[in-house]
Length: 278
Image (cartoon, rainbow, N blue to C red):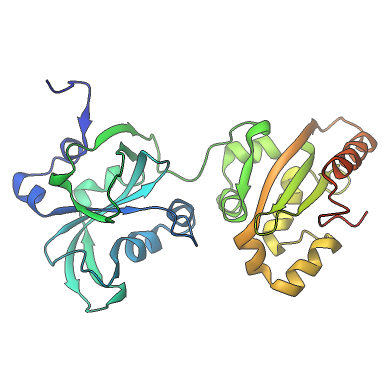
């Protein structure tokens, strides 16, 4: 017996029987290079064209199809970002192969509707009617604009995530970081090397320090300037991850913060095996 508490996606969107026969879902997740959810926060239009209408040899859509764009939030939850009726096929074998017109009546759900689905097929495009009911688990009060601040002890952001948070000036993150002194960790996910840094107030609070890293990749640290000089800012953007080891309120003496920074450098051996030089 159907669960009366389950809201199918087709019901939320009020798709007609005719629309259901030509509605297809494009599932997008990390492709080894980029995360579509991070891309969406930075540039929704790019994701709603390039990621939705990309094909690799196999044809995904036909003119007249309705294409739903879903981005992976976890292994079982997906964010709906657009629904477009395909108007033209471009004949591209590998690349953006279609043009489409957004279905305006569904726009209130774009970037807000989160659905649950356990994807078992490797196929990136499936007929909605063949999937069973995709369950709507939440409709966000506002368009998704990046991960919410999780607490100081759970911060772990890629460069792209950090950039998106700061570029969008997300209020929860700004409020959490702007008044904090801290000892933070930068990890090069390519080789495992660490850099331990601090925000003491004298050199800016944590928000200031991390804005500096987003701006140029090195934040003025001579140890990291060499990385950017040798490999380019693209290396940092692709490989660096940022987390907080300890945070302190603005009244904590900077000498104490520097002492904790020194302790973490020794504990992680970031001078011997990482990117710290002192």
